Length: 199
Image (cartoon, rainbow, N blue to C red; front, top):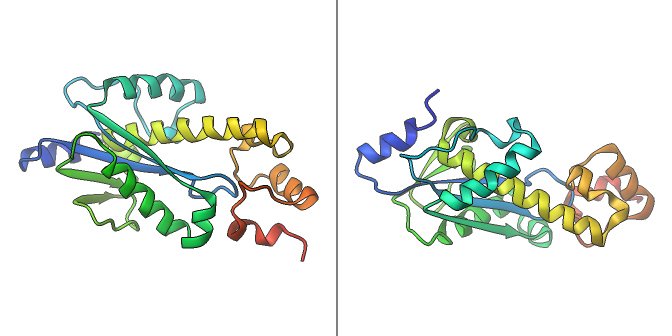
C-alpha cells in the first residue's frame, strides 16, 4: 500500500496542505484522550513511519522527535477524563480531533482522519485503518501515542499504586484488581470503571 495515496490524491485536486489527525486513549480506564494533528512535508519522508501500534516503544520515541522537528505544523490536544465522563468518549474524541486541527499554525486544505465514526465539522476524508494507510495519519498516531504514554508515566509518580507507567491506564487485570482493592483516583473515568466498583 502506498502510504501517500490519499495525500497525493488531494494534492492533485489542488490542496496545498494535507493534515493527518489521530487519537490515542479511546479505551483506557484512566487518563485523557489525546489527539495529534500534523502536516508533514511529503518530499522528505521519514523512514520507519508506520501505525504506532506496530512499532516498538524505543522506535516510536525516536520517530516522535524527528516528526516534531520536520513537521510543517503539529498540534497536540487533550480532553480530560472528567469531560469524557460528561460527554462520552466518542464526543470527546471528536472534540479532541477538532481542537488538534484548529490548533495547527498552518491551516490545512483537507484533513485525513483515522476511522469512519468521527464525522467532524471540518473539511475531512475518513480512512479505515488510516494510521496504516496514510503517512500523515501515521505520523499523528506516533506523536499522540508517545505524548500520552509519557503523560501516564508522569501521572504514575503521583499515583504509584496503580502502575500507570506499565499499562498507561488500560484495563489490565493488575489495574482492575487495584481499582477493586483501593478504589479509583481522580484520573479514572467513572463511566468506564463502574463495573469494577463494589456496589
